[in-house]
Image (cartoon, rainbow, N blue to C red; front, side):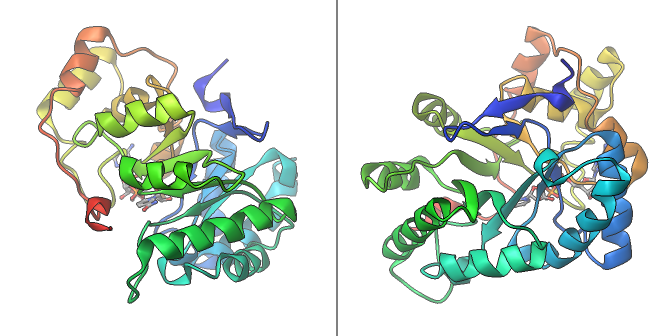
Length: 285
Ligand SMILES: NC(=O)c1ccc[n+]([C@@H]2O[C@H](COP(=O)([O-])OP(=O)(O)OC[C@H]3O[C@@H](n4cnc5c(N)ncnc54)[C@H](OP(=O)(O)O)[C@@H]3O)[C@@H](O)[C@H]2O)c1
């Protein structure tokens, strides 16, 4: 089976595509329609958004128009959205708002975007409250699966130690050869939490990974693009991916990952000095 059709079974029994499509900076009615049209044509079936991206409405509108055009229905796609950090403690209201904007009856995966809150202190108390509200939303059928994003091992242990009835299915984190957080990977493997990578290509406007000489050499040797090497590196470890692009050529090539990176090149990809491009959640108590 092609990697772009591969699905991972979540604890709820639902299946989540390993390869999805990121939508940070995909905005505006026409641009979203055009981008998602290309993504559906290329074969992506998972769309990752967030209240923070301010595009749930555009995505809802685009999918409504595009699904019939692609002979698809709601059940054929997987929608992820996330709790805005300021909305900790009112996740039920936030889910209601996301459902309205996405114009659908349920969300496939709802994530706590960030373990901290804005402008409040009691981070641990607030994220616990959010989780309890998310569990209630699963029971009511508004959300099928729940998970977290930017959680460190410490935040995950805290969540697992409180028996809320539902464990996190996914942890979406910054994950690429310059930031591969081995302790987090091992912990998630042990606990059955699926890791989903963001910024696999380094993020918007960052060419450090795509223009790294070692990565370019591996790509040249394998006859692939540097982006394909970076994405294959993740899925080869069973880490899910959500690359974002508005460029037709990239949208299509980023999900063609049916090749193997040889062991010696995997070693090179694991050998880089570790850094982070995004916020550091270790700073959140
Ligand atoms: N949970 C979180 O806190 C969090 C944080 C960040 C991101 N995310 C999610 O993860 C998704 C992916 O992360 P991201 O969008 O920040 O970064 P990314 O996917 O690593 O990179 C996107 C950038 O790479 C360019 N690009 C895409 N394919 C390319 C290719 N084959 N060759 C060269 N350049 C290429 C895109 O340009 P063009 O668009 O111009 O083609 C865009 O500027 C987001 O869209 C979002 O859904 C989550």
